[in-house]
Image 1 (tube, rainbow, N blue to C red):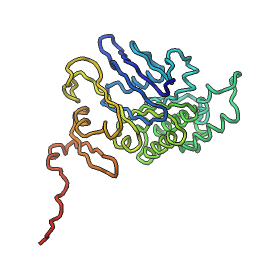
Image 2 (cartoon, one colour; image 1 turned 180 degrees about the horizontal axis):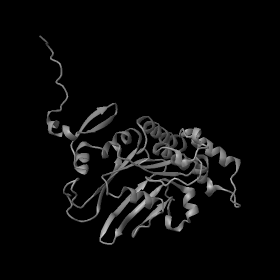
Image 3 (cartoon, helix red, strand yellow; image 1 turned 180 degrees about the vertical axis):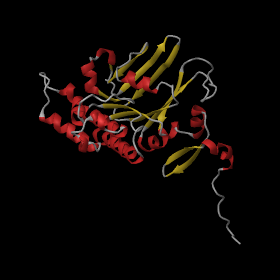
Amino acid sequence: MTNGIQLDHVTFAYRPDQPVLKDISLTVETGTFLAVVGPNGAGKSTLINLLAGLLRPQAGTIAIDGTNTQSYSRHEVARKIALVQQEHIPAFGFSVAETVLMARTPHFTQWGFERPMDRQIVTDAMEMTDTARFATRPLASLSGGERQRVFIARALAQDTQTILLDEPTSFLDLRHQVAMYDLLKSVQRDKGRTVVAITHDINLAAQYCDQALLLRPCCPDPVAGESSRGPDPCVHYQMGSTSKVFRQDEIERVFGIRVFSAPVGVETMFLPLGRMAKDADRISPPPPPSANPL
């Protein structure tokens, strides 16, 4: 039996003549921390929803540990995959603790009751995400960043092998962004979980993720520029180690911007130049000191 998540020639389209994802084949091995990156409209959220079973591909198959996901019930999928979506509608009237406890539903007894173990798992998840102090507060009373941490706590409490996250740090301040990646990395490393996260922060992904999946629409795009493959409305994708996928030339080609790259430790960091793009050619490391200074 093959472990992990396998996509075999997966194609999905919201409109028949405009595929969002086309002929995607890849494997996410168990215990991998995968970053999914790419410009807006490249199909990142669609891919996550396909993996979570919220969408079904028009062609191809998606398998978990060798079993086609379409053969699983929703209850079975919820025991295998937790999903943190990009946008959430606060559960009206529910407290933070009650919201996180909902993640334990797939594990409740046949009578639908939680056990002391379930409540302990919820408490642990809230402590890991720095949300335990909000336990009795209504979810709707929290800020966007605080709610985001609650939903990540809920995903952790679901206790699945795979955690899918759609831009998990989009509402978080800098400290909590780093703390969240530290937490996800520890969950992957210490518990052997598979983590798949959509992100626009290439620098954090380079530091924490093992692999990266770079998606790019193949059709001409006003931001990304002309495709090397012509007007075929497919999606170009590249998957590999972050050091192989995150290259200056590839980032500039996919996102259609100029970037400055520099080694920081064992990783390469990238800075979008923006208004500095006109001066990009003048940015270079200082010359080495003279051997015989005057």
